[in-house]
Image (tube, rainbow, N blue to C red; front, side):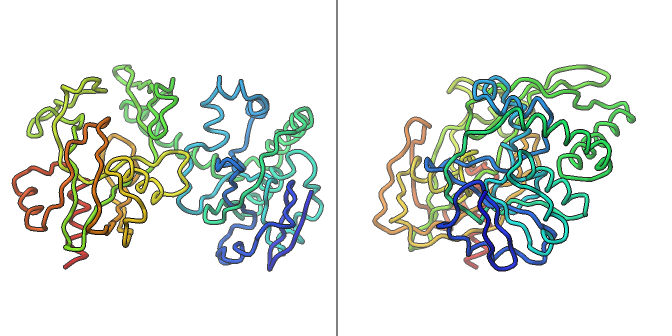
Amino acid sequence: MYTREIGDYLIISIHNINNLDLSQVLSVDKDSDAVIFTGLLIDENNQIIPNFRSFPNLLDLFLKRFSFLRKIFPQRMRKYLLWDISLQSPTMVDWVTSDLLFIRKDYYNKYLKQYDFSKPLSDMYACLECYKKGKQVYIFPDLRFVLPRKFKSNTFAKIKGFLRFLFRSISMYKNVLYPSRKYQIKKNLVTGAHKLNNRSFLKKIGANFQKKNKVVQVYEGKVSGQVNYKQPLIFSNDSVVGLVVNSRKEIGLITIWRHSPLKVDRRNVFPIFPDTIDLGIYSIEACRGGVEKSDLNSKDSILRELYEEINLNTNEILDCKRLSKLISNTAWDVFATQVFIFEVSDEFVPKLQSEEYITDFKFYTLEEVKKLIQENKIVCSITQSAILQYLTLEN
């Protein structure tokens, strides 16, 4: 176990951190209630090391130990290893591992001096103690460190430690509110309210229909009420949209075939899970896409989409502005769409992605864009909202 001090913080890690640049930790908000925190850890293959977790049960610890079991029970690992957590901003978590721990020295000297962080699950105990004291545990994604993955662990010692943790949780921490418990309480309140009102409520989330999808996860939801039925539940990370403009302030839009309502002026004619090119319409819109689970930030996501869809390289981008998020009110649980404005050089020549049926890319003047909207030729609400922000910015 390695330890170092920097400023007001004690750093604890199972890795050799003597050559690690830790100065960035001094930028953490000192007014935060976070007394234990970590950063985003990246391995040599540029993959995220899951050092932030929910408090486990015995089965979680056992499944985590064997890679083939993790593949068989992905939903348990999704909940335990927080696969769906947003890494766009500081986030409170149940606990963080001793791969890299930052602890405020005043808190450590007062409450944690007796902890031996070389013992299995001591990091988990320390975080649970933190919530008992009314403090918080955070991951700060802006703090990024490259560390090797550490695979060796004593499973028997962890299971023994978990049994001790379980006893302490029941006896000493029964009323402690850590993030996963708060979530469960809120969920119970929602489902309970629906039960009391005799309305339908989500009874169970079943199989994942798109296990290999990098952006969207579709589950089978079992809904109970006056009528019991199964309902597809769609979850995803944020989406992104990039509005491309040139030096003449013209807006570049693609023409793409979309699985969309068959008739935009008719209700309830949207094909559920369309699987044929015959279902949909051509749509004039901005380049957009979903933030993949492996992406470190939303800007990287839209830069990838721009390169894939119109062959826009970063060296052809003169400027980039991040605008506000767009919050949609839909059954599809996309939390928000982040808007970016990319100013490109006049020499930029697009190369279209034929696999996604992109048939055209064209720069439109502001008057032409307004006319397209008036004539109902831009029906993508996300594109319209992004254009509106751009026009407001220019005026």
